[in-house]
Image 1 (cartoon, rainbow, N blue to C red):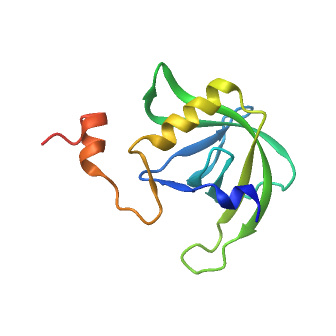
Image 2: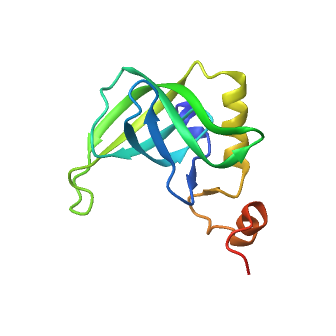
Length: 136
């Protein structure tokens, strides 16, 4: 079994958008993530085995950072066949040469209440404490 399958994948509780750092264009939304990579869903496919320069906007600042800049290799890309998802693509990205700062930001993000184990319901009380929203 590969290391990617051993790592616990986490799902964002909200949309996290990924953009191309070179063009500024929208690439896709994060479906799940580990410290080694992420899965995106998008309307346009990425080319497998190509390195992409990407940026993930953080849902809230971590320390002084509002985004994670990273390079990633697209390991696979396939068109969804289910009717609700037809016309969109799923893609597996492996992080490539992450800086120590960006790796730390990803780890902090995955430990926050903005991500959860796919079997776990969101912890709304923690989200309220971290963000102040929605106020009671």
